[in-house]
Amino acid sequence: TVLSALADGVLTLTLNRPDKLNSFNEDMHRALREGIRRAHDDSAVRAVLLTGAGRGFCAGQDLGDRDPRRGGPAPDLGHTLDMFYNPTLRLIRSLEKPVVCAVNGVAAGAGANIALACDIVLAAKSARFIQAFARIGLIPDAGGTWSLARILGEPRAKALTLTAEPLMAEKAADWGLIWKAVDDADLMDQAQALAASLAAGPTLGLGLTKRLIQDAATNSLDQQLDAERDAQQQAGRSADYAEGVTAFLEKRSARFSGR
Ligand code: LHQ
Image (cartoon, rainbow, N blue to C red; front, top):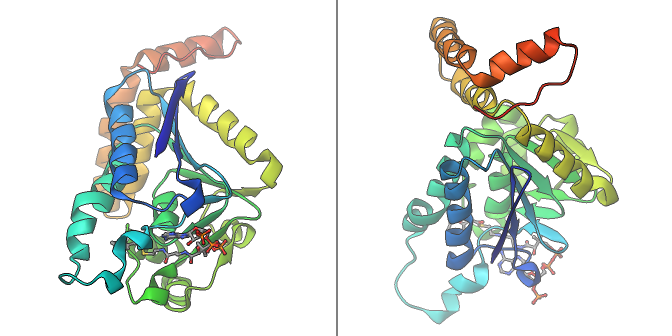
């Protein structure tokens, strides 16, 4: 349900239930979580590229798994979030390596919000983001209320979530919700090139940078200045800092080892 391939430091994870627009069943949840865990544990992984197979990126939860007509006890969606979505969100955010997301087609429900949890999001111009939850009586989960409110502010976040209207990739980029909307035919080349260049970067410094940017929202300036000092101290001891400065002085491009 998730294809996993490591090449040149990039771990590519491809959601792979294309006939269901890569909606999540338990198997795909586990496979994605395992993939991101591997990115945490394996030092050969220096960047992650997340994308979807077929014409969609991800349509959120597989609703076929949740047919209320089948009867049975009332569903415990809080448990589903605790067991599946929330651990994955936390693993993406806490990974001290860049995560690029290539949104190759529609991203709906939790599928949209998992994309927004990634560090750099590229989307095909034909892709759309849909906070589909209101259509089925749910609230935006997988970090959606948090990231939309933070990135867009309340007016746009409320309009998108209360109406469940689709947002096209180019407008998402104009609004700063994603990094870039690119021609469909160029999406994977551009996303792969970006992930490869990040994977060839100073991984320790990039990981610290990611953490600092994320922590900024809840830190005071004083706390953030202290955090920058501590992180810079660590970065300054890395082999990649020595290599970066040496390469600059030797007027050549740096060959970072990620340490
Ligand atoms: C699907 C799905 C899908 C199953 C397309 N499931 N089959 C929820 C509950 C539990 C715990 C906590 O969290 C959550 C979080 C959530 O994510 S809730 C939101 C769930 N997702 C949605 O409500 C989106 C449902 N899908 C759609 O609205 C449309 O499919 C979109 C707008 C994504 C795409 O529309 P189209 O491009 O017109 O494609 P389609 O609707 O024809 O879908 C293609 C196939 O994929 C189709 O199957 P079929 O056998 O008829 O070809 C769909 O049934 C299937 N599919 N989404 N979530």
